Length: 341
Image (cartoon, rainbow, N blue to C red; front, side):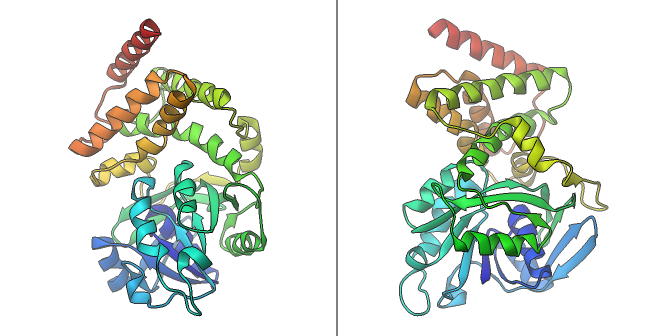
């Protein structure tokens, strides 16, 4: 199979580079300065074992590839807010032998949250979800790093909305040859919703810095408890924290990498890069949506969603809102919600 990595940033670039290292055929899809660097110098991937450069085909969309191959696997690794544009670009791409990508090719959603799989199912017949446990960083155009060791990441994989098949097992086998653990599970959504609860702290980290210290940790606990309450009200099952810890163990331990400091998670990196967008609408916003659908107030997740969106739109510096100020805002939001209720 040939892997077409749509969005070869931190996560997509790491997976693409590792697959190439394992001898798999890979095409990278990127844009702007990143695409220019990939084309001119190749993908530089920094991992604990050292830095390697992979000279891989790099394109800005399906056009330069002509007809896609019948054995292509499309790996969607853009941020969720960019999903619709990517699906529009690739769904109608022709495939050798007839038909379109949406009709014939598997699409793997290598993304945070749960919304991308639902969006993809509107267009693609065969969609696979992944619970992404992969500490990685976009360092600069053409350069990504992944600090995990001994494995680069753990990627639970399954059909959307549920089930498994031979394609999932073949993809998992390739990933397992490329420094990943890739369990194929029939209930990938359970893993994704569990990861979503952890990702509710992404916006907190992005606007106020690392979630460490008593005040930040207490606020995150409140935000997560709100999310758990909403999932319970919606009847949505998720893997327990204990099951997650057992699955991960010490298989992916981040270590410092020379020249590739890890400043924060995906939302933090969006603010640092000044992209103008952030994925909070699909992380905290997922809890807000479910809360509104099931009549559960979600003032803390609403607050983080709004503030993170403002930070991105105004290109405010990551971590520039003091935690004490954010906690005070959360207290006011929670009090107002209780009074309204």
